[in-house]
Length: 367
Image: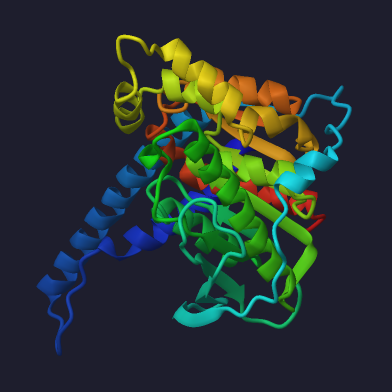
């Protein structure tokens, strides 16, 4: 079944890409020698195609056979009730959103729009909320997915997910990161403000979406990879409007990730604070005490029945143990373990797109 899903996604693209490798003579007149040469070239092209496809099938078999897929814990009793003080902490002044809208591109099934509007609250930075909105062309109400990017911003993985979902009848909303990144923070308080701000920005992005006539407000989801998955986890814990989420390479706590990550930028940021009288244990303790907007702390408020996790078995950026702790705190949602590290997980991108789409369609009762 897993191979069938993977091949149904990958092979049509592969075939279409390599279908034109055969050499064809074009001219006003074709001689006998030309016909023979054309036949040889065509045969050679078919052989090349077979070799390429055989290699891809073998790679796909190796990758998918290395995945371990676990369903949601059958004994899961449901999420923890959100306390009033938590809801108040992530509240914000409401506004009638008057957005700046520009057309970025157009495809057969959807239009890509750039949406800009100010946040009603700025705890970290003063950037406007910036969205790339993949909107379905045909009239009607469609399921809509919020896509939250990695620390590097809206990259090829975000665009790939957006195109994949948009081509299959979903509106997609890629919310850009603010210019400041978490590694630029200088204190635990600033880290808290950064992640709390992401929750507030993404909730306002949902406010914008639910006013749209083409958006079905009862079919909202979110997904993200790496930092984007951590942000998606935080949002799913706070906002009841989200019915499901797909979390790729997320983990917790932020304190654990900070002191144990093998990512160069994180390690260098931590080293700035480690001195003779400040240890890694001190940093871990301070982050644990002062960061409220933490995936591990908010995980119990996520409905595990509506969550799909991807954990890389050899992840050193968001260590595997952090992914496992988050999964446990969430209530053991459906989880796929990938035989990869953090960055080599991109090899599973087509598989993650297909399985995430099927997961959302299942949760939204779509055919």
